[in-house]
Image 1 (cartoon, helix red, strand yellow):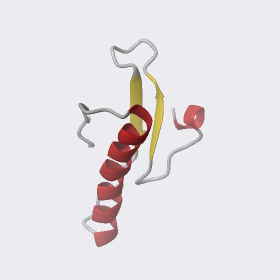
Image 2 (cartoon, helix red, strand yellow):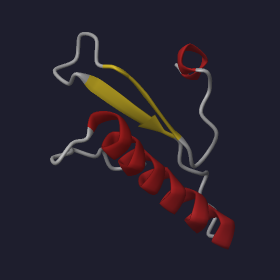
Image 3 (cartoon, one colour):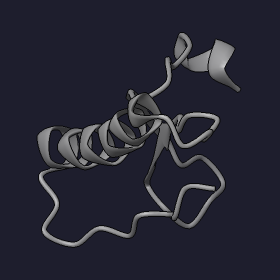
Image 4 (cartoon, helix red, strand yellow):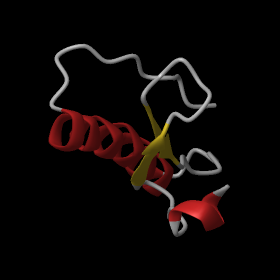
Length: 70
């Protein structure tokens, strides 16, 4: 999946079309492998923040459904 969108480093976000999904677009983000280190918390926060920023910049949305990262 990441090869089709040019990769996506941990903490960053990318957007693609929704294609056959009910959503027009899909925002992809990568959270860290969480080991309890401070760096992990920062990367996880960046993943959420960057996906929300991307949605606002690209889509200009007022309403957004954000999948919980696992």
